[in-house]
Image (cartoon, rainbow over all chains, first blue to last red; front, top):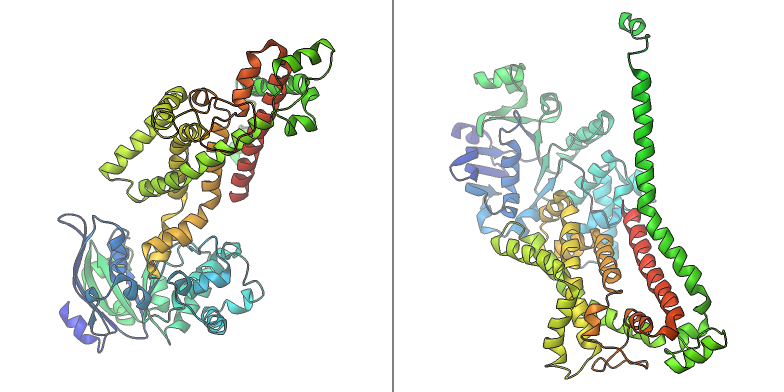
Length: 260
Length: 296
């Protein structure tokens, strides 16, 4: 696997020998190493329970929320060891979008977008705030739909709009990397298409890592793909190459639908 | 398609099954009716017996003495005076009890939510449940020894509200914990993923999200204690006049009802006081129901 890291020049994010265990000795992710290319969409796919979400959540240390989860290994962000950063700084640089849209229910659309600044007590002039909100909402192509109802609660939006709002919230900090954990699995096909188009557009500015259950989604929008199986990173490479000519037999079996 | 025509025939025993279905519906309806009838009867009785006494002086004057009531009764008049001393006493003690119980209860509830699986939290949770089962007269007794005997050196509103506050605690603790538990984990994670420190997520996201639930818990706790009589007999004792001094004996609406009950001349006042108390509890319940409905 180490050869694959070398393939990717100047990775924005470099994962080295990462293992995560929920119970002592049982690894949900074992010894994964990979580099993530800047301004590309990298998809992590694999069958249920293969550790793809666990890997993703290790990147911004969401596992710290739960005391019995143990993480070993190193992750470098722009060459800097993330273990030396505080969780707070790390999560500002690495944004995250979840499986189910989860706007803060008591906050307006405007406040949801600016929530990262507001909750962290970062004070700004109103003009600056307005600019960030407008830019973030324009980034996720939601601005035209909500610009007249910014003071309404975020939960009034449709599911697809809510998910784009959550993406806008993650983008408000201008993160280096955006992590998406099956962002379209709770959405209908039309909303899914919009989010997918959005991700292709967003990679011009951001590096995107996408966990997906859906092979064709990975094929449609990702530049690089990882295939994980039983916690192991089986194959990692350019999406085109992997789908046409998988190296590992397990990847081939997964892609051809022998198991899922 | 074939099966559709085959099914056209009426299945065997359909009539008796339909009859059983109807019978069951009737039985359920009757039992539901039995459940609501006591409350309807209670309110009906209280209104019929108590409405005559409810006038302006009922809210603005203190309780009459036996002699005044006896004169009025013999002249077939409405008993003069009111229950102002009871109303002010109840308000004073409820406010005082809330001031003591709400902050502590919320904090303990948050603690239980945060550490739901820790051993110490489990102990605290069990003890909270036990506290909820302690008879109110026992809490009155405890408040008597803690406050009446050692702090105020005499019966006092403070002692009464201490007993009531302890009664409120478990209700607030459990409703706080349950409310916070209902908030989806993903909301918390959304805050974490934005790099927000945990205490800020709690204060700025979780508590506002669960606010209506917390408020409902507090209102129900108040409606639970507002009619308590037994612990007040050992602590607040009662007083003839309006009292705002927390170190002095104080009356309360349920205490007055008890006093009226013991005085054959004041029977009419029992009903009107009970009507007022009942109305207040009903109002609190309706408000909390309304808040819950709005949330859902």
